[in-house]
Image (tube, rainbow, N blue to C red; front, side, top):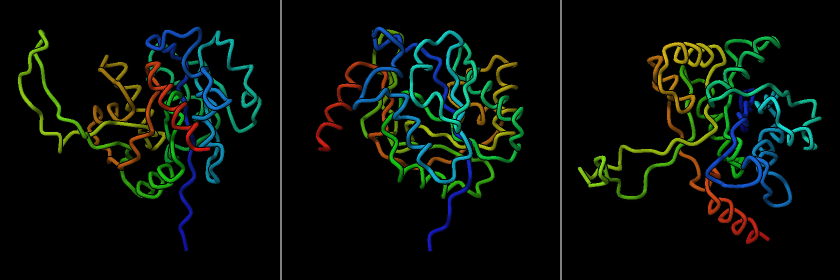
Length: 235
């Protein structure tokens, strides 16, 4: 008999503008398979039986979010995003605390522009980390040869790729611990690029859970085109 995965909150930071896409709107609102990227990114969580709710952080003046059908979903709560990803996530965590969420609750933070999360990956993350003292994240081992370069673009050395992983999302941590790590690192003006780096800064060692390589983040036009072609070939 399968073990039911733990209950969790999902947090989606979606206040960025995605300048590298050079589109007429933030990349999370571009179309993919008849819906926006953001709607696909939300879908995997909304379809999960143990989700307690979802918090989406969007820009205060975002004109696109209210037009989505999911904006009226009672399971989704909207909060104002911040200038940086960490600000948006922190605002969502503060909101969860205000709504009575417990410090020990699991929170999964997922990129708004990562629409191809597989349900199997989500379930694996939840099962593997259910009793972990720290938490962790989906990640993929580096496949290509990696080079370290100088400021002129000259190779200094080849890096051992066996110890290098690409960090993906969701990233899964306890609400209280993640809240403290993000708040303290922001006060210290530390460089925080994702939730795992905040936990690392706080002295923790998140666990990596290998996921699918096609759980890509849409950053450039070719990423979106790759997904469109891949999804078209499903039918």
